[in-house]
Image (tube, rainbow, N blue to C red; front, side):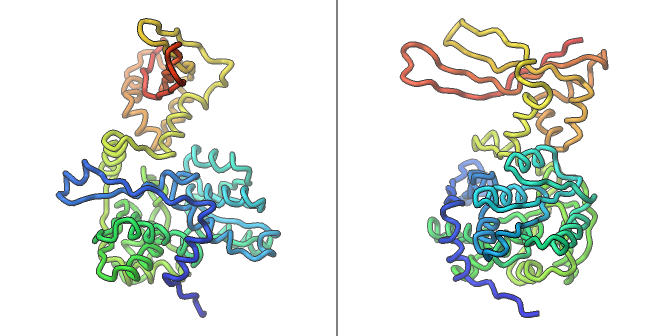
Length: 388
């Protein structure tokens, strides 16, 4: 089979093609990380993309490059969440019919986020391999174009635009740390980075459970791995045995792959949220879900308005059955958030297991004073109240 060779020129064309959909994200200096490691560290803020992740770049490039026939027929993809959301966003924007297939391990938060973009979401399979097989079969039966989450030359080129932006702004950077799963992001960045700066060091980072690319490169061939639930759910999944691009590209260009534990991932999330005043759209949407998913607004119990200082308006409390909250905690990321808010510990100590709980994770403070030139709102955590 003659495979398309992905070049820096392809990535440069992708940069021009996707500029109306994917933004050029900030390259933010991290004072705290720089202090810790003794080198200047920068964070590429891909969470600022419209869909909250870098996946928008690859999806946009692949879909914008489709033939008119494929656009009319429709597209399908398998995703652990972020790629599916990106494909759904672009398809919705361009008026293209799309089916997004996700495995059972994907969080309800991500599934709901994809559904809100007006596409069909199909939950199928206990692993990404099973879901991928279903997508291949469905695409053949219905004539839909399969947009791979990572093993696609247009997707890879789209992700590679990140490296171009980095070197345009900071050509002196000598090391890139890139998350690795199926290898689409790393492959695109590797091709662009090594073309622009051949001596650049590329370090992949992935979870220590079910690290498909790490194990495959280590053994010199694609190997199957067991999918285990992780906080880094977007990195879950194996590499199909018929992989055409990413395995060989990563094996050729990546200098090292580091494995991180669940504890390290949790501490890193907390560190970024607290020290850098940043968070991910997944974290925001999960926190929002705590206050919104269980009861509609007209069932809310209003909180009193504080008048001691400036006017402060609290968002409504949600009354949540304990059973519903325990179901919510079954998602690893939700559990982490609840734990960080002190909610999980409180619930475990409840004497009456039939109790309901009131949760007010988000508090809106609005400056409505007469002297205020404009309204301003801040959001923060409040307390959990037990109602025996």
